[in-house]
Structure formats: structure tokens, C-alpha cells
Length: 107
Length: 466
Figure 1 (cartoon, rainbow over the protein chains, first blue to last red):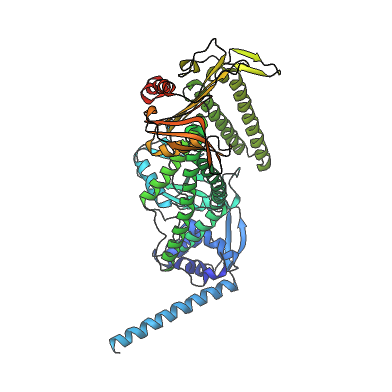
Figure 2: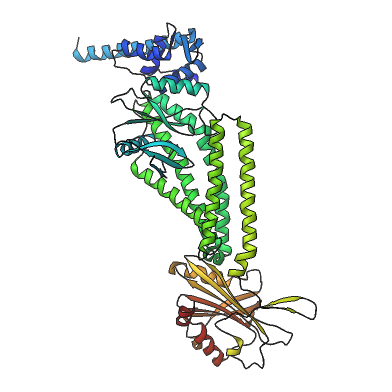
């Protein structure tokens, strides 16, 4: 999956990268995202596998170690930049929303 | 263990309908176990509510002798989420879960679409595009044959069913490829605007299944009607041998897969076994054809005549509906009578009779061909085909004539054409109801001869005889 595909991160992409600020494996990621979002966002094993592979391909994450079939990953500088870009995009959306609502309510 | 095989005919990317179908099957007590050469194998279970999920794994392949390391990791993570693998078909991985609400395997539509597209491009689309190229060439050639030699294309069953197969399969491939392109385009637009991948409708599945079944039956019929269906034993043996070959190859493949035989060695073994089996079947067929079929179905000569210039002529003594002697007084029998039931399909039948002189007495000869058109819509095509049956003969052409003596729907006579000049020949094409008779004589028939021909070959007579 080329880098352009990640210009806008979906919720699943966003939370996977967020979890990987600390080294963890696939199962941990699924659990962490569930806890972090109080069950609002779920990541299926198929989606997780494909996204981890794609993130690794574009250098957003890297594999730290493999114990048997269990593989651990951590976010890279590139991945952090992607996460930050997405955060800023969401923040901009929030600001636009707030401004629009203020104008509408005449505050 | 009770098992059941079904030809399901789902499009490769029709995961929603596959899931719904498998859930219904499980509720009826049938669990998918394996997808084998286009057939889906189910085993009997207690009817139960199971959840199914279809996903695609790019590294998976029917050619792999075993799961790759990455696939094992993927399967393990699915198992941890409560999904067990039940069958595979190329990159398609079909899972089931006994949990009531398991986490779906795919939870991100954009990632799912990219993954499906990657897997489709990897094998399915490439294979289908390659087949499309072959089928386009075959369909083009069938079309040219139908125009150039419509009689063969319509009366020879194996050619007719072969044509039906190429056209049906071509339509199926176009339907699949264009259908996927359309689905991908629509899904991409939907996902971009935050929606889901598009779900294919049920009728899409029925069209796909219909085209697959039509192609399947057409190819089977093309295969078994190379010889007349009347010879059932031969047809059964032929089908049996073919199925035996498929079974041997499939069993061997599974056996090698279980024993984790190296892929190159396994491919080599498969090619060798297929070649040996095909050669065995072919040699059996050739031997059988020589010894049994030829004797049974071909007209058999009763004598061999050696002409003055040393050429051997086969002499036949078949019953033919019309003879020279019916029209002319002959002193003694000097003829060979040959009756050939040439070809037969569900569309038309074709017979030929030849009465040739046996010696060098210059006695008049007779040749005629009868076509029975079974499907009225093909009447003109057959008529045209019969007129052009000797298309390689230049400067000779059939023209319609008015001659009440034939008492026919239409009569054509052949003429030698040289510029504006037309010289009539003693060859006629007569249309009696659904029978078309093309007759060639060595003399110009008078009213009495025409009456005899009419009595012997007109529709009511032929209906009783053929």
C-alpha cells in the first residue's frame, strides 16, 4: 500500500499507530485499542494484519522482535509524523466545527 | 460421514453472499469442508447457528503445498479472535465462529477494499484475463465457421456445443471482469465517502451461476457428443475415464500436499501424471475407434473393386431411399450404394446418399444430401449452408426457379456462371417443409423422374424413413 493511502488515517489506523508508541504485538494492540476506546473501536485480526504489513511497508512502524509467531512492533519517526498530521487534521476539523457552531449560535 | 458436493458459482469477491449462504447451510445441517475443483464439499453436522466470515490473504494459493509462515501468523490471530478456518479457495479464506458476536475479521473498509483488490490482481484477474484472450480467439473462430460453414456448425453436435461453451464462457469472463471493475469503482467511491464496500445482489450470483452451469454442461456435451449419443456405453466409458483422470490428479496433489513434497517436484509429478493419463485415454480412444466405432457406425464396404488404372474402390451396398434404377431402366447392377448418417445435433440432422458406378460403364450416377432443420429459426442459415456446401467450387451458383412439378416450398437450380451467361446444371436444392434436399444427377430429370424423386424424398416420406 503506497504512502498516499495514509494521508487520511481511518480510526483503526490511528489507534494502531497510537498503541505502538510502546512496543507491542498484534494481540496486545487489539486489546489496547478496545480498552482505550472503551469498546467503541474494534480491530479485527484481518484488518490488523493487513494494516501492520502496510505500515511496515511504508516505514511507519518497524518490527522489534519475533518470538515464534509472535511479532512485536514499535512506531517509527515516520509513523509519529503521520499520527501528528492526522491529529492536526482532526484538530482543524474541531476548530472549524466550533467556529461554525459559535457563529450559528451568535456567541 | 455424510457429504455433499455443490457447484456454487459465486464470484470470487462476492463475500457477503457467500457468508449468508454458508450460514443458511449450517442452519440446515451442512458445514463447508473444502472447495475442490469448482465444487464445494459439505459435511453433515447438527443444524446450528454459526457465524461465517470471508477474507483474503495475498500469500495464500492453491499451489502452496502448505501455509506460509505469514499465513500461519494470520490464521493464529484469527483463531485468537474466535475464528476457525474451514476452507480456502486461492487467496480466499473462509472462517466460522461458534461465538454469538465475535469481532469481525475485517473492521476497516478501506483496508479491506485494498486487500481484496491486491488479491484479485494477484491471481484471479490475471487468470481470467488470460482465459478471456483465449476465449475471444476461439469465439471469433467459431463465428467465422458459423458464417463460412453453417451446416457443420449446426449439425455436428460437438462443434455446436463447443461453440455454445466458448460463447457462454466468454460472456462469463466478461461478466466477471467487468463486474469486478464496476464493483471496485463503486466500492472505492463508497469507502471514500465513509461508507462500506458495495454488496452484490442475489441476481448477480444467479447470473454468474447460470453462466458457469451453461459453460459446464456445454463443454461436457461437446466432449461426449464427439461420437453419437446413441452409443451410450462408449459415452459412459469416456466420461468415466475423464473423471478417473481428474480424481487421480486431485488425489495425488492432496497426497503430496499432506506429505509436504517440494513444490517444483510436485508440479513435475503432476505434469507427468497428466501427460501419461491423457496419452492412455487417447490411445484407448484411437484403438476403440479403429476396432469398434468404425465398424459399428460407419457404412461398411462389402467389396473392394480394383479399377483398370490400379486404384482400389470401396463398394457399398447400403439401403438408400432413392436409386438411379427408380428412374431409369438399368440392365444389371453396376453400382456402389453408400448411405451416411453424417451429423446430428439438437438443431439439425444431416444425411448423405451416394450411388456411384462400380465399373467403367459410364452408367449415370446420383448423389444427394438431406438436412432436417429442427429449429425453424435456423432454416435460412441451413439453406444457405447447403447452397454453399461446395464453396470452394467457383463460378457455380444456385438460383431460385419456378417449377410446379417439384411441388415444393422452394426450388433452386445450380448454374455455371460465366459473365452474364448462365448454363443450367443438373443439381437442385428442394425445400419440402423442414427437409432440405440437395440432389445431383448425371442427366436432366424429366417430369417422370421428378415425380419419382418427390415420391421418394419429399417431407412425408422422409419423416417416415429417417
